[in-house]
Amino acid sequence: MSEVDSFDVIVIGAGPAGENVAGRTAAGGLSTAVVERELIGGECSYWGCIPSKTLIRPGDVIAAAKRVPGADAAVTGRIDVQAALARRDYMTSSWDDSGQVPWLNDNGIALVRGHARLTGPRTVEVTDSQGATRTLTANRAVVLATGTTAVIPPIPGLAESDPWTNRGVTEMKDIPDRLVVIGGGFVGAEMAQAVRRLGASEVTVLEGGPHLLSREEPFAGEEVGKAFAEEGISVRTGVKVSRAAKNEDGSVTVTLEGGDEIVADQILVATGRKPHTDDLGLDTVGLTPGRPVEVDDQLRATGIDQGSQPWLFAVGDVNGLALLTHMGKYQARIAGDVLLGKDAHDRSSRDVVPRVTFTDPQVCAVGLTEKQARERGLDIRVVSYPTGGVSGAYTSGDGIAGTSQIIVDTAREVIVGATFTGPEISELLHSATIAISAQVKMQDLWHAVPSFPTISEVWLRLLENYGL
Image (cartoon, rainbow, N blue to C red; front, side):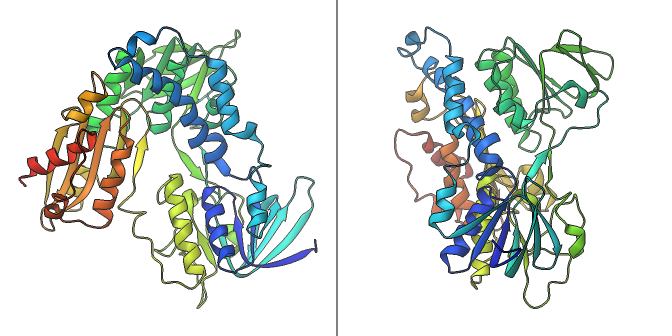
């Protein structure tokens, strides 16, 4: 390799977003390089979606069986924890990315390992693990796809208590007997339930807001909280952690404002994420390190003068729009098309973001919440129906509960938001995503006939409640 290498497109970050934009540009004939400092496949493949959902799945299967008369009698043992962890290891390739590299080679994408920093327009300096540097230049563009990292809040003693973030909990080798989770968002809620079902005797979730999953409809967090209580997971809302400490016996103590103390074997911190932009060289091109890289609807970085030929793009979590793997991949496809000269625009990352919290019950939502819709001044109707109130739910087992809700913009007669809660109902979400993205009129949805008996029949009940 020469000291200076030139490519049409340089992608910094080989997670799902980076891989997708690189695949798009390479397939379109642009010479493309990907720079990665950790593992090809990124956070999602090794410390996020894939291992977390793999760890969640055994508990979900057991819970589903227990809801079915006849099948419940077959549930006589406990989860084989070592087998579950071994499956997690298999799904992450034991944190070895060698199986990912052939895809890059087969698609003509150059892989450069090391830490990348911008040193000016269209110029990237890469430092490898030995400290050697290599300069890459982009003829067309640099695409930032560096993702985010977990935030450890500045609570006295917390960092010194060796807390887990999403990485620690998805890499765990043993199940802690007592776990304290700080943060009741989707990561905290999902992994609290997973650890409990894998064998922890005490799990406590601490949330500063009035309910779990504060970014979703209030009823969603309340229903998850009720389910947690039934499973023996303690949820304390409206609380604030004042300090943490590592004890001599290896346990940890979390102290709340007011003096209450909780002793556990491990802390999981799930209080948010920040963009990987601290040491990315943003200052060399006029942007602020440590901040998300804001973009327009073609994923071009804003806040700098890019001239007549924009050269800096940002896709995925690093731009702060929608911190979800599928949205990063969507943005990557848009950016790739723009780089290939197509008139592509992002229509979904701000208002049509599908999201699933894989707790039991699951929480599936897309578009605006009721509060967001009202804050925008929309004239709306909120229509709801029990998720378990259709025949498909009854055939699935006993105790299938939850809420299905749509937010209708009455001026346009289209849905602008939807939320579904219930066991294993995430597949309901895509129909709502299509309805919102395509702005399908309510009267037209009436002719989309749900199969019987499926839980999708809840759509028919929602439309009837609306008055159709």
